Image 1 (cartoon, one colour):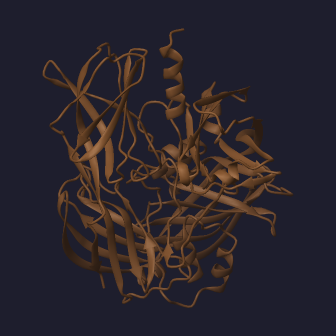
Image 2 (cartoon, rainbow, N blue to C red; image 1 turned 60 degrees about the horizontal axis):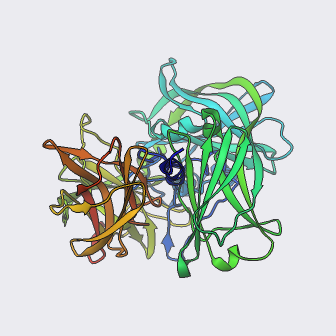
Image 3 (cartoon, rainbow, N blue to C red; image 1 turned 120 degrees about the vertical axis):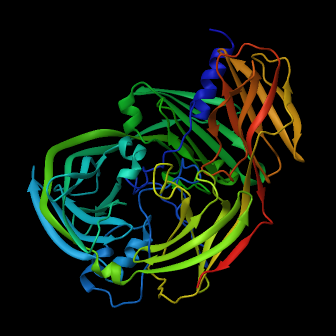
Amino acid sequence: MSKQEPEEKVLAQQLGGEGNHTYPDFDAMWLKIAADRQQEQAPTVVKRTKRTGFLHGRRLAFLSSIAFVIIATPVLASMSGKWDFTFRPGLKAALDQGFGQTLNKSVTASDVTFTIDSAMSDDNGTTLLYSFDPKDKQARKWGFSEVELRQADGEKITQVKGGREMEMYWKNGYYSHRWDTENKQYNGFFETDWTFPGVETDVQFIVRGLQEYRDKRVPFNLDTSQDGIQTFPIKKDGIDTLNIEVVNQGAEGVQIKSSLRYMNKQAADTASPRIQVMKDGKLVKSERLGSAWPDADGVYGSRDYYRWKDINQKGITFDLVYLVEGQKIDGEWNVGTLNLNKEKSLNASVTRELNIRFETSFGTSTIRKLIIRPTGIRIEIQTPEAHQYPIFENTFLSINGRKLEGYMALENGGDDEPEPYMKTLLFDVPPDLQVTPDTPMELMLQNEKESKSDYAHPVLLKNISGEKQTVTTDVEGYPVKWTYYKANGKLYVKTGSTNERFGGIDQTYYEQEGEQILSRIVYIEGSTPWVSNDRVNVFPGFDRTELELYIKIYHIWHPDRNLAFKLQ
């Protein structure tokens, strides 16, 4: 084995394999609901829960709206307390204030009773609240093998597979459930952006197969003082090896980077691994949410952040925790025809035509509409180009002194759809914030990210070999460090800057016979593009020792570019 081979393998394991990692982390919403949940909420800022492994601009299949002040239906209000709406506070707000409809239809198959308890429908989507009772005495982790929504005549509306399939095809919808200790059952909800014209329609909701997943814990001896990659053989349950790197981040503490190499696809689809740090048998929580993703090659990467004083205590232990399949219950549960009615939500909806123009680095954009609905608020923005959109590190909607943090849903249009230039900002409204059609609102966009292309000045990479080389250049006044080397016929180039205003180099290229040979991005540090400006690019089939490398796409943050708009 050559010297380069293990280094490349370690890089692939450490950095998560080649390709773009854009899958949302549904582990916390699906099988890992009870584990590692952390939600930070400042007194005056309502923050969306950060999702790991999530590039900016991606979204889950829930679209939003808002809650008006009405007298809540007691049944629905009490019902909403049994469900976990950590990721959908706007849905709880709508139910608490009476915008749902009670259905209460059940069916029993394979000795499991499945019930559709209620529904919430509006012009943004459809949500069904369900419960099921597999006769458990205590909580277990269950997932459906398949969930399907059909028209009354049997025509399929949408279908959601279990496991990683749901992660990869989130636009079809998603489900989430948790254990109800009092009633010894599981309460959950299914949500899709599908909706129907008019006021009501009939549908069928079918779930198939229940698969249990169990936590398996493997301890490992991590030396937190050691530099470089530490490898721990697992060799069981389809998992080959665990690789850990401890990164000293100075006063910020320590970052623990981890990745797994799998032996088969089934383990990659099932494992949902996580690193747990324990002190005398109690969990040591990380300082902030790290990033995590499964890639197409079965390499799972994650990053967790700790304070040095927490990680260096006596009695600290480290465990790899992952899921393995347990009991399986075959069966199909279909409660029959469900009548969905969105009359209440239609009456509670308000749409404001705004047409507020504003300038960004992409040109002139226009705030077209403000849409207030039972589960949240939507703001529609028309952009100058279909694939260009304004990105801001912070997007807030100020309502009566409360700042709601929103995000942009980019995939509500495309080249072959009616409005490819329309983007949507989404804001969930928490249950304790009541809004009327006339409540004053202000949109605040802070710290703009400017994207640029085709930087004119190349960087010269000399003496390219299996040994790492570094060179530092100036890009528009920002220092950029280039680290490069070859491994197995590929050129790896890592870039990064000590100046946080530099947003990173997303893609590079070199010229060959009049053509641009573009790099492939193998890893983007952090779950959002403002966490770090480190990037790694790769050129396959590379055999040169010297290269003029050009920047294709790069970004710059502008903290002085802040916008505010009175919406009503």
